Length: 198
Image (cartoon, rainbow, N blue to C red):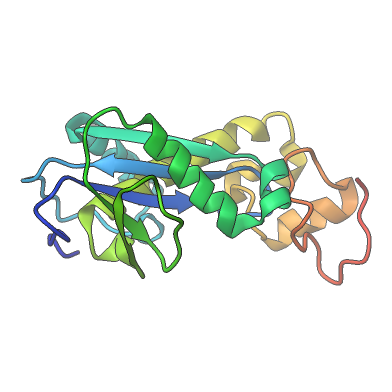
């Protein structure tokens, strides 16, 4: 993990979790770290164990100057597509930040202008910039907890384990049980999909 910053201005790192999931919302986080913040364990949340993510999430929340999350539900995802929903979730998170910032660091190649702020899109940014890695961890841990919570009402899909992602077990459960209110109906939910019980 590089400790480099894009600039000497106040940077907000933004990343999302849940783009590839078949169910549940997409969650984005926006994080502002102190200028001198350094932690060698910060990295892309997908490369860190669940236990380590939780530890880092607490650490980030303790030391961050600000952090917020934005949520876009499956109905809106189906309406505007997952790319636009991911960007919308980032905008929602940024709307909640109540301290001054100057530059947005965005994970991935796509973003839509947020007000008049300068932004920099960085492919694999969650492996290159600590602010983006921190946002990745906050978004991932928040979403995992949410999926574990809604699992209690829909245990057949085993979201406690798969968090809504397209495992064989999850797809089989959709074939048997049909689609829940949390599924993204614009996605290919089962193999050889022709019709689904809705």
